[in-house]
Image (tube, helix red, strand yellow):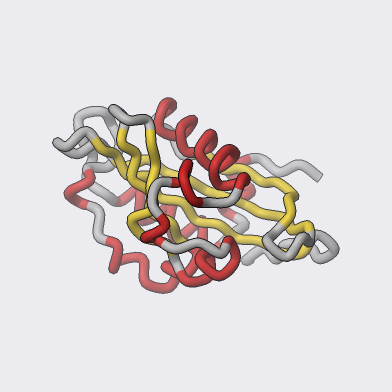
Length: 160
């Protein structure tokens, strides 16, 4: 059964919390939240599921500046692994970078769901919710992403 983006966001307590936080941030000129108003510590309970990615527009490259423990363990990567196009799995190098680029270009939150192999070669259902944060003066932007997953044979649990 297909779900609308709103249903995916509202049905997932981690996505709901990130969306509420993002909507409460001060806005920059371009309508996106101002990078100066973003405070990672304000997202305490969802930090294990959160990735903060920096986008260097001039170089068209991404790197993690924060990666929650659950995501580090699941995708077998670390913040200090360098740029995503150099040292990460194929899913992160291609699919995830394309996803991040589309969020940056549209300046709108994007939710996506997909079934794909995890590092243990088992298929899982992933849901990914990414929100843009305004550019800073260095020409770099931040993207906030929450990721949840479940084995394909189990239904993804939805919060009430």
